[in-house]
Image (cartoon, rainbow, N blue to C red; front, side, top):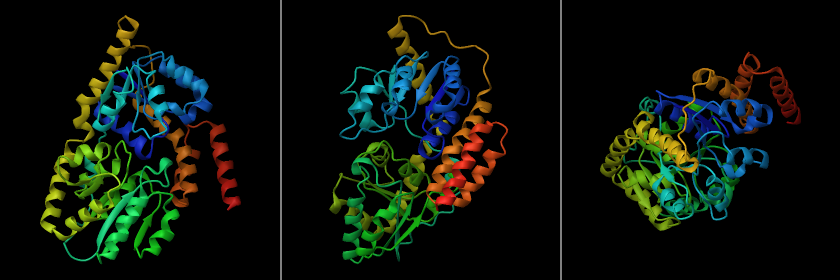
Length: 403
């Protein structure tokens, strides 16, 4: 089967999903395309989409502009749209995704929710991880004594305050008032907004900003537990990654976190329940036997979410998408056999083009070393056209002049 994955980027969370699907479907041909490149290479996308069996839109299709929305709604191949989560004012996500043959979700919470608002088939295929990356980590588990290092990861502030950092801050305030020795270890952009509040409550914190994909996982070597205080999530990915690292998790009952922690590996709390979250941290800190049990459980549970273990889920997802298309069109889908570039070669090229957007992100987040390193790779690549290279160089020079 030929599958085209369309996403906003091929790094961070969306990139991890796309690359993971490649691992899960190692017998299929999986192609990449970033929606950011539609502006420059939409004809290439159209050509490719006419040679595949399924088009999987991995990001919020409700954000497509009108030109591309029409193409999505009239897809030349069976298509599927992922809805990761839905905030209060985001029903448009479901409405637009309902133009696809199938809607994909990543947790039971959203499977149940979306089934109430659409007539289209809604199917669950879980988020996964490359388990090997996390087995190599040199994590330091909490000994039961001293400062407990609490990890949080992400980019803030987000829309609708769905991550509820305000709730986390109240939890930290309670812990400090109770003389519980803690330190916050955070990674990602936007946390600067909360520095003043951290200082006001006397919270010690260590902030790592945007890193390369290879270095992001090293975050879990720095923490003892992972905290998720969100109201709305599809994942979140770091909960699964923490568990793969053997790091116990305390989370509200959201998305995949709810599915995972019902099996063990940490504690679940009601959303916005500051008291319950505070007590959960204290319980795990003060009971090292329980802490170690959660650590062992977490690693065992995470093993089942290795991308290679999810082959059947994603194979079924795409097969059902074709079946849904056949039912709608009252005809049999003819699997594509047209001449096409090798999938692995195509993915390499698309990731190089997508690196242009990652350079911008790295520079914006003041990670100049990684940004310049990645830009150099792009400028010397024969796969990237001269126009895009020159634009990137001009933008980068302008960025440093403005600074």
